[in-house]
Image (cartoon, rainbow, N blue to C red; front, side, top):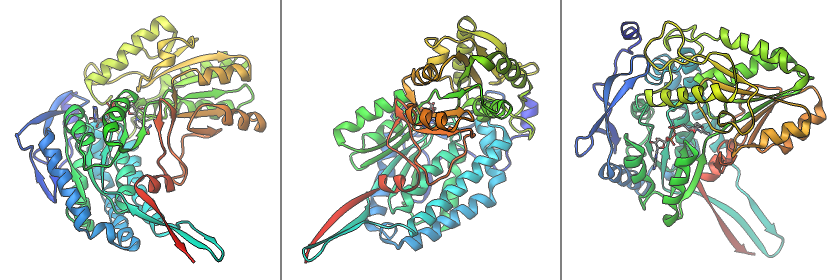
Length: 490
Ligand code: NAD
């Protein structure tokens, strides 16, 4: 296996992964580094700089200087938009290399990593368009007063991101933050720092001024914590676990920081007995097993109406067994290797818990032929009770819990019976029921008879323990800007 993965090792890997501060690649001031492993062999393939408080201070100082001394915050939206479009062009032109690096570092199937690289480019293109089309409010009281909104960038934005689809999720924050004229310090996830190290070169080539983008690698408790507690960082945009979100929320409180929180999920997919079964099965298979199941919006609880339950379970289990687990670098692979042995252990512990909480109908362990590395079979538990841990807790791997229901009311109760509220998927041909259910389910995003496909203009975010605030379209612009009201007497 180790040998197999040697062929996947991307060419032109950097010698080591460094921070990028004020336009220069640098090591940690105290020289600290940490091991980065590849999830197929779990062997260290590179060292990354482990950022400490002093490194974060240097990065924030550079970002603050770039914000105060400009030119970036004061540039015309059209000029900033040009730079963003160039960034998108460069990302597109390097999509293959980016996908190879992402797949090698994170264990994501290469084909899916390529899709994520394209999404990253699209995110920049989207916000490039949005800022030039920005309209701000004006209100007139005839003969008395005129009022208008003066929208301004806020300052240094701290961006803290997770290890699932890392490059794409970084772009989802970087693009609106810099499009609106802020400067940034990015702290990427410690499991997957490789692709983030490419941003610096891309931004330099696109002409982003020095100091606008800064990157500090390292652990959440050190680099992440220092960024959250830095008084010169008024905004924190965070994506990660709900528990981490709570800690960041608490640590930001003394500074009254602006917070955007995209957190965990345990999203239901509800299949009524009038649904188009084949489409629903295909979509719910994709919904939980794509991206290795390491997807915040995974439909990891499937609720199925009793009339079709047995047929659904049988067909679903058979299809799950056909999902191809393989090396991340193989273009035919559908489920690759989980990101890290710690995460693998967590997912495997839920697989064991599931064996006493439900009936196992597919998977349940390591796939054959993969004695090492973080490979998990697509695993399906059925007849799972709503109080089971595998029904309630986010597993974040290729593991799904299926539960029957009788009535629409019961389905809604089951769907809402969790602390999370990120996404919901509903499968029915009854239009009235579809809309009523969508409007009553406690989820920030609902897909009706649809896979998880996004329109970038729509709000993205969760309710309950799944998040605070929204990203997407103008909501991102609102988060990264102040809207000052200016009143004029006439
Ligand atoms: P995590 O919370 O462990 O880490 C996320 C980031 O926070 C990392 O960069 C980490 O270093 C940093 N961090 C950790 N502790 C910190 C602290 N005390 N202060 C500051 N920063 C700290 O999450 P993860 O395991 O990397 O990611 C998986 C989680 O992310 C899942 O729960 C998943 O659902 C969630 N997620 C949510 C969305 C969404 O949009 N809602 C998208 C992707 C992932």
